[in-house]
Image 1 (cartoon, rainbow, N blue to C red):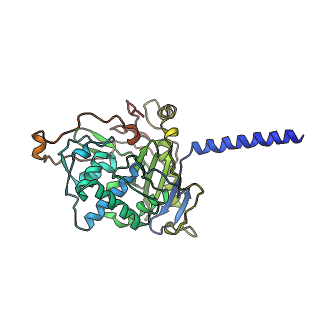
Image 2: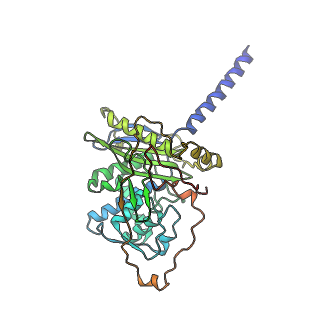
Image 3: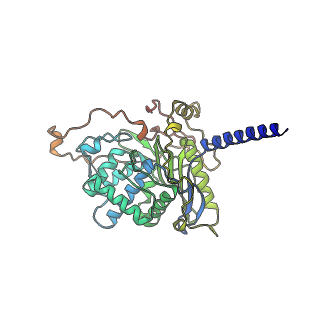
Length: 384
């Protein structure tokens, strides 16, 4: 009898472990939602777990730019030049030729909607004089804001040794952007941009679909999974949410919408304050890498197989409404000024795309939004 009891206990324990790991594999990683005005944390999970930021990095790129503009060192009409180094950045990118110029205003719209890595590097070089100096400014601002477990190694979020953040730190950055630069919040809520030849819709599909959504940025590399920092305002209340490590764009959007709704409808009484949260989590210092989960052939097939017959995502959320119109696009483009070296052929321009694109690019969204909940699936999948 005791033996049967022991066997039953072992089997039960094994089944329980399988259930726990299955749930973990099918849910997003660290999350947090914060009231911007009070700093009250209305929900959090693994908020101090180290994670790859991916293109959430561009939120700090934007923060440094806005600080420079506020200090009078730059204006939103300052020129941004695409260097040879910037042109070599892996996708997602705009493929502007080396020597091309655009305004800082247009460059910011491009990195926050299209998440273009080449333009991010160009911004860094044009604002600080060098990419390395700009990264130093990013890390200095992170330290000043109290982002105690964040380190940046570039201006775009491409993977590399030492790049890390946490949900708590990203919430700090999101709140700082909302509080300090309300005059620039329109950059984070654009539905789409148009270059005259092509329209790019925002990877943040809550914009236009979640009532009150007004930001902020998505990110994806194989190591991080699908990340998103979101914001929304209703009845004078603004909240910021962070979702890290979702398995696909659908889960990222649905979980972000749930957190925003909770944040907008939950009182902040007796809640912990973001700035005074103490680190927790036994393995929080271990940097999570989801490549073996997110970028397998099976995982890619599951993501694209979860769409409807027209290739649109199927979002099961009571908080996300259909967009029954085309996305509103703002016009962006080059200034048309090209240094003489380019015309004479003295500035080399990359003519082939780098092969290593999959781990550094958000899955491509369609250029046109159909009247549905979601963004269509690309005809060609990026190689992962």
